[in-house]
Image (cartoon, rainbow, N blue to C red; front, side, top):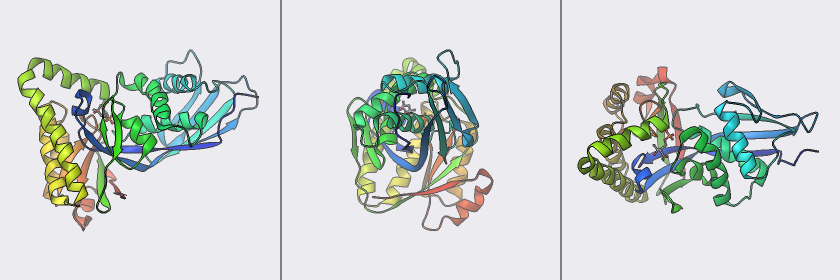
Length: 306
Ligand code: PMV
């Protein structure tokens, strides 16, 4: 018999409402869990000594988790399993997901948290899950802030401060969000490095810009508490331009952001590391003009609940 796994586990995706990048420097960020995260199922393989197989068709992922594998997903998954004292052989794991990979929607954190839950169970301590997930996330992202792992494990809308954990953000009502994939791949590690480089070159200008991004995140908590979507949209749009100032937007994202505003969005910004990934749009009550304007991008309309 291989070391046991639970038969099924899931974890949320995430979208950062405000505070990406500045969160790396200790400022608060606000993020929401996306219930359409990753669901994993595990069944024993025919022999306990066979490597663990991992199949997630939506990501065209078909792997065996071998110790000598150079595939980052295999390496990250083995880090998570080892961190949790879980099995490293003997199981076939299959996954389903609605999250696009590498689009800033927390796909890798959802995978690593769900994997840790297969070992530790659905009632596992959140801090333990986050630590296990981070063991895998470091393979993908270098030194992540931990925000993705926390939201993947905890769900809901959270105020997160690096090293200080997360607290739930009260919402006065449902929050509709439109996610528009730019279909441009990007690397979180490269984007984080670009910010650090600009900070080192222009410290006196970039330090207050990072503080302003943190202040926008803090102000969004007040807007959410009062369901003031006009204020929230304005803060998102301001944040997009501040993110441009720290070098993480792109001409394509700027064009998408301007089109979203022209189609009636209350606010729009890049979300996550930037450079590609998704545009986050706060839609008006009737989002049909936006859905028509971005139909070819296959936008994702989600509603976050209090
Ligand atoms: O990998 P993404 O696109 O979800 O971005 C992560 C958010 C950053 O603030 C840019 C990095 C971090 O570790 O928090």
